[in-house]
Image (cartoon, rainbow, N blue to C red; front, top):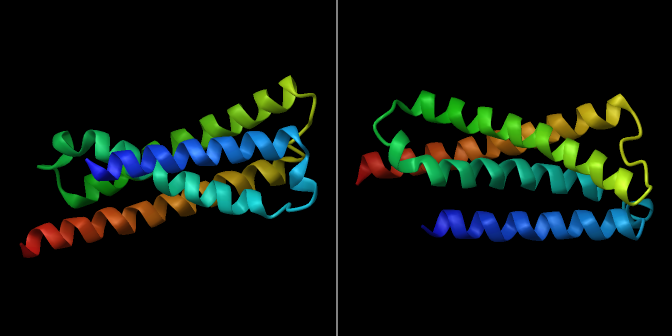
Length: 130
């Protein structure tokens, strides 16, 4: 479906931006861009995984669907932090400055997950009205 394609394209774009910014030290000039990347990454990873599992979730209560979205976003956020750490090791750039940075990234990713939940809930309400 369209939701899966759009989510994949946006996530690929976010990974490319992250790679470029880390490689060329561009976060030095736009340090707060990481917040937006984590917010969008959380949202679209949740939507992607929801889209992939939609057929299996369609008969489950909406609360279970929303918990699924948040759970998958939590796993994606932790995986993303591991990716950032590994990429930083490869390009000899320490990106994970502190535990506060990691926690803020995880928190921001989960806020994106709540955005995805809002989207999923809106889709659910729209289907009920049809």
